[in-house]
Length: 69
Image (cartoon, rainbow, N blue to C red; front, side, top):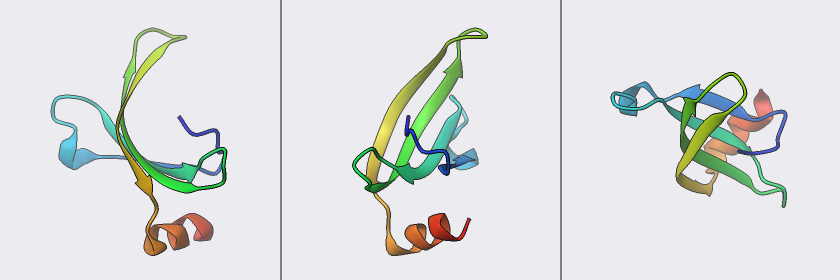
């Protein structure tokens, strides 16, 4: 999804009843800090299906979280 070794991903328990949903905070290639909501489905040992639900710029609070971890 994001090619950021410092990206933070958390499981979205509130919205994962029918599919495994994740929230990831990380830098895009252009340096923008983004919050990305996506699904993750492992198909087999070598493949996975990722579906993008939403992406938006990080808020000031989310920027501080990213910088502190």
